[in-house]
Amino acid sequence: MLEILQGSAYVLSILFFWSGSIYFDLQNRKMKEQIAAQKKFQQVMQSKEFMKEYLQIMKSGKEDKDV
Image (tube, rainbow, N blue to C red; front, side, top):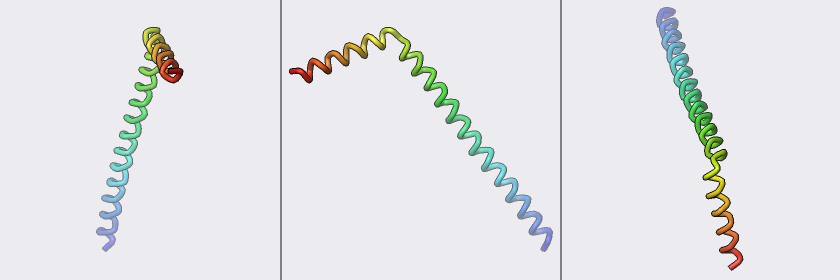
């Protein structure tokens, strides 16, 4: 009986460790993707062409509201 209990405790500890490792890996990947997206967004925001297009869109939006 004790062997069965020890065996099940061993299996459960392996499953717990495995599921925790997978959860940590998924969270780590998600965080890396978010950091990469933030860096790309910062590069886009620093782009002069993007700012020109954005200002043109905002001006055209104001003109449409005035009409």
